[in-house]
Image (cartoon, rainbow, N blue to C red; front, side, top):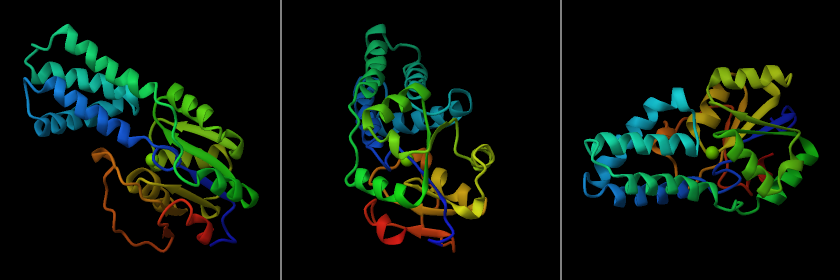
Amino acid sequence: MRNKIKVVGVDADDTLWVNQPYFDDAEKIYASIMAPYISEENLLRELLNTQSRNIPVYGYGVKSFVLSMLETACVQSDNKINADSVQKIIEIGKDIFSKQVELLDNVDEVLKKLKESYKLILLTKGDLLDQKRKLRQSKLKDYFHRVEVMSNKAEDDYAAVFKRNAIKTNEFMMIGNSMKSDIIPVLNLGAYAMHVPYHATWAHEVAEENIDHPRLTRAKNIKSIMDIL
Ligand SMILES: [Mg+2]
């Protein structure tokens, strides 16, 4: 496998830097704003339903998250939510945009090492502007031959990336934390994948985690990638 791989795709959120914990914290604040109307458990279930419904229209990222929080707030409060609370919900999103990027441990040295042997491509989904901001702050940009902010990470989205970059599937490996977005579609296309788990996963991204596949490798953490690749 090591000899075959020429191009390595790397996910960003919760693979290179912290992301999901900001959303988990944001949901706690949202639940406290909505507490007069609905329990946290029911609210977050309704929010997830709204988000899942809206993703085909809004895509991923903070702006999509805020619009879905506002929509859920209107519905679950029977339109009684006041402008003050609406303002607070908007602020939740702005706070996420203002977070300084926190790199996960050992990311810098691992990318530096990988770049010596492979062509690296950053493959992330979310708000275009926000992902570019995070990449700039991360100072990781120079490790990557290309950066693609994808609107989704399904099989046809990866197939389009392969075509655009003239990548042969059997020479490609994707590294990421999400089985649903980083691993399964890539395996289905005939490429290799390496799962690097992260402690927090968005409910929308949860997939069958325990699959076995001849082209799937599991790394304990980002540093242990170096023992495998
Ligand atoms: Mg991720």
